Length: 451
Image 1 (spheres, rainbow, N blue to C red):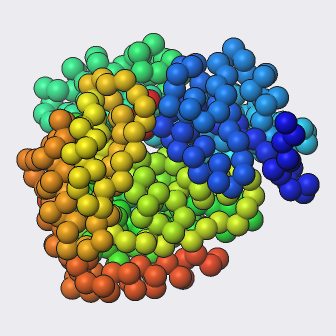
Image 2: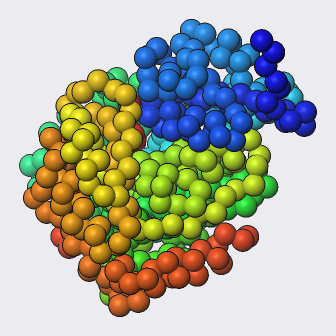
């Protein structure tokens, strides 16, 4: 049997090599296939989610992985920077088409101290922070920042690990004893010596994130601000768009655009944010961290945006024009952790889109996500209540479901049709060129989409 050549003669990229084979790699491959691209993966788990969509190479088969692909990207920001640099050098020599995002983005995202220093150098506000390399410096940081503070490893750690909340002077010694090995690289969370980072607490009202894509020509397209709710340090729910945030949209898009331009970034990036009050009592944003990859808080975009974050990442990597990031219809995304629900009960709810990651069940493991997009926006909250009722692990949403009808301003009322016009309006200018801080959730923002 003769198989026709499926590629245009002008197409020099046919296969995308992805570092990592988790659910993000799987969804990137799903987005690549309709565009005519295949994917291969560098991943030591042979039965990883992405294995359904392409060949998986182990880390010992790096040379074969390189040979199999024309261009490279990643789905996991804790990928060793040495590997990323090696792939980037191949493009400089002309033997490959590129490695996106650039190594510098990983280097900064893997180090909380460098990350916050970058934000501040770009005039992007953050919580106050101090580098800490000794117990004496920790004592001084507690004095300067004022208690409570949170002490973190600047490298390693995720979903709340590698952190210690210091509420009183009595906690200082215990915090230092628990995390001090990270300073010398002896800690279990990181083998790279690096200072700790002490962060001051702030009062914030909401946790938001914004996702953007940047093409190889420098074009940036931003998605809506979304609101995120965490459960035990893991993202549980994302609402898109975030209600009552039109007044913060430009600040968010300016921030992520500045970061991407500063890094010479190519691909999709997420920026996690806190909503707090400035000295005049007005809402403002504080940057928490970047994720140099497609992000859990953007999964809603598969059905909820004109072009999903996954497709836009693929487009950027292969140097195609970026797609429209407008919201198609308001949506809520729920992570499924640990145990699969009865799919029949889930799909019996109108407006449900179910995405399995084909993973074995395990406590707190992300094994699927569900996006709710009922035809009538007024049905969104009732549909969410029905979904929560059938979830084995309700990820804390049964305890407190944030009302959907709670706009900060009348013009942002999600239940009116004006939301779509507002979304369209606020995008056009960009596309072209808990009241008291909760100790545990506020410092568990390193939502890294661990496999």
